[in-house]
Length: 509
Image 1 (spheres, helix red, strand yellow):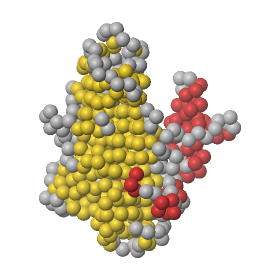
Image 2 (image 1 turned 120 degrees about the vertical axis):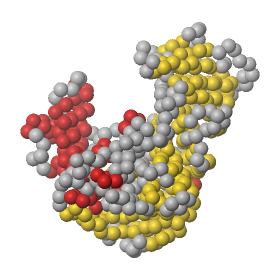
Image 3 (image 1 turned 60 degrees about the vertical axis):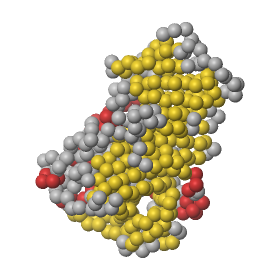
Image 4 (image 1 turned 90 degrees about the vertical axis):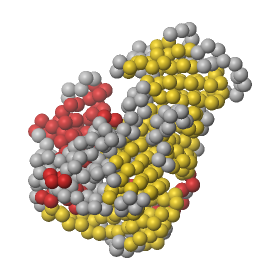
């Protein structure tokens, strides 16, 4: 994905070139894999990409060793072309997120006090100002989506970003915070069984625009909740997407629109793709005034870097304008045709709380209820209740309710010594994982495996108060128990260590 290419995004043919190179490296690594199982996994992924991806119709740019191995893999009928797994991955140290499903992949590029906003040096990436400001990447079956993107897309309107409407100079002159850090500490999230929560505290390059943005990533959809503040004019871009043809249909509340830039007050947008798996829909939970257009954009690689070559691409671009405070709530829906999208219900998604302290949502999908939150900025001694869980720390939280209750919680800031939360219910602990380095210091059936990856207990309890080392993303599975428990015994203590830090976990039963 381009979001990890740094200033390389301003180099001509970087998307296909990087794709070929990466698959070539995987092919070579398959020959040196530590086990036959790992070797087979690599070969299956290589075969999938070579079979499905257009760039591999031409192998000439791949080195001879990789070409030889790839040809051998492709001719071996015992190797199936296996699609990569569906997943949700956070790369906390680089402020990047990848969410992958059968019909799409979704990427988020952020920055923080640990990671710079963008890289520009040696005359490269001159317009990359906003590529680390929450920029979203949406990959689908249309494999041309990010080909020639950066020299042709409007650099002030990258999808997922919210920016002031002021002109910028090339970064060599105007790099106020080029590849430097910001004051944002809450950048990250948590995940559970392939579903994810991502939160971003945001300050723009001159600190005249600030806000909080949340992504809640499910199977067929991504829910966005955002809160911004500024005394100047700004735009929040919800789509900036390449189109195969400018004649592709775009519908606003079911009505076909023209190419011209116009304002609409609406709740639903559907962008027709080259096929079902390339189409995308937007549901605004409240009717929102927005601007939308289709256009042909022309650019040259020499405008953003040291390469050269004129290129042109078709785009659909949409944004919302603000000049004080802004509250956004919308859902991006993938992998459906217009008829299916028209039947897709927005009431599956509810925003419970949205302010500059927290974003809390509820969503029902496939008979499973999710409750999730980014708690950005709690005051001292303040707490918030989410589904009978009282949380007293800034955190990302994801709760899944089906036949059992599953809870995932983490500290995106990686600065807090402790995370505090209380479960106010009668429950039975089925499994507890994520307590790296945990050890039992008294008698009870709470077991630690050798690497400290998990603990398990079968305890009937009324209230659990758990304090976790802040850098550990704890994953807890709970099942309700109907018996009425009114007494508590002495606390059972668990110690958890990570990178030399130690915290106590107390369980009152």
